[in-house]
Image (cartoon, rainbow, N blue to C red; front, side, top):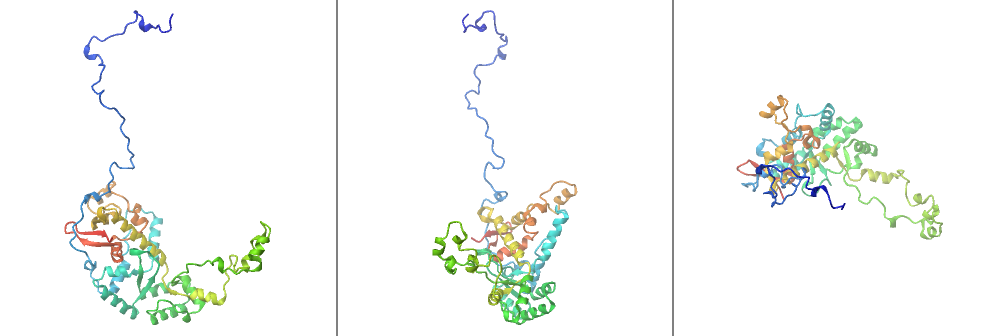
Length: 402
């Protein structure tokens, strides 16, 4: 039997056919002419159209009715002293009752706030004053009267983020000095006497204190070096050439031996210390007393917090279209969209319903330790990073300066 013969060609096998023509399947489908393809599965992490979170509310530039040159109209201050006291006491928001913080985190926040010095930048003071010229004159008079003390902060930040100088009340400085247990009472008295008799002297003169006293004040954080040398490593041409380290001697030595590297005492002969600190009396006194200036304990964490808060606020403004946004919207972004404490937000929280992000998970509390929005806005305006202007429709607006 041929191989191509099968039962399909046999007359004994027949297929059932439907008697109803409506049940018969049509050979051609009405959708056969359409192109059939699988739907494109888009990634959930990438939106279909690029957009910002809530910046689409303002597709056009905000109306500009004039710059807000000072924030003094929002407060009533009677001089620079009140501005300094207000800035140091209104830097942080109080801890929320239901913020999602555990006891360890609450202790960390409170201890960090307590450890910060009561410093206020000069830019912050100018942001809350009406006249820069009158403010500078008043600061000079207060320093002369031993009420204020100016602390220079060189090399911190670049461009608009430069901090420059800060102010501290002399009574606050004296209180911090009295709490320093590592400093003797006699040295505390001499140091305060020196500060009162030399109000304008930025570098501390080493003639009034011994090396032991300067070391004690420096370890306690009340003195710091004004500048560090950039090139602390000696150049190879400055290293003295001894007989064991001369090129002819090294070139004749066997490869891999100690003589090939100048011998076992090459480092000592070249002026090294093998990791040991060796200073002569003159060099030690020069390195200890050169360019010493007044400082406060924990000034470093304070400056890092200030730089972080400024950068975070500027980044929030840059997210907006045209790099400008209303103040109320910027405040919401700074707070991180937390649960509202008034109205419907508080009622939802009482019922146990989700009504926003917990404060403990926002950058305001994770990075900036709960810094107030108004405080960091005043700092950024005084530093020149952002500027305020009147819109006439949505209140005040904030925009980048360049």
